[in-house]
Length: 262
Image (cartoon, rainbow, N blue to C red; front, top):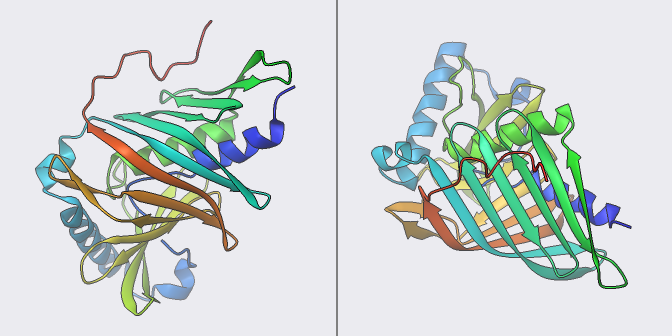
């Protein structure tokens, strides 16, 4: 029998992880009193500064594929367990995530059209059971939104007037930050909080309600990436990701993201 609860928790993590930005969610009606033209100009300026903090524009735009791999710590029921993860991305909108613990491995893939969840779990007898499930239409829309947020580094894709929405200023531990709200089809919204002075990403709230925070930095190919990602919900830490390898434009097979047919 599969660990259904474990699968549900892992899927919530998978649907929420993004490396390209993290914010506090606020109602646009409460934070933005500027005109539409002024808001668009402000959002464009914030995006430009946030991308400059990551690195040169031409290097960001040259990214076609990405792969992160490293360690994951999952917190649940007062305890924790360690495993490994890998996340692969390919433009325009493909993603594959593999999370492995001693008793279960979850593989979640999306090729821009369809998605799947593959669970390989160890039974009490020591054998393995495998189950493959198709993503629901809801999960497809959410996973696509997460994929785009990872690949395009603050620029909405496809470009759309009024997206993202500038939603005002918020103080965060004594620092003035600016908020951008990214809207995706299906009502999936990412709220990003960006340091006003530097353009550094502070935090994000994703469609699952998980707050994601970046810590540390490392330079890969002249671009800044975090060394630790923390996911929180309702004040509790759900997981930590520690990327040990970050590859820019690795060769990824054509069928890597496709539904497993075996």
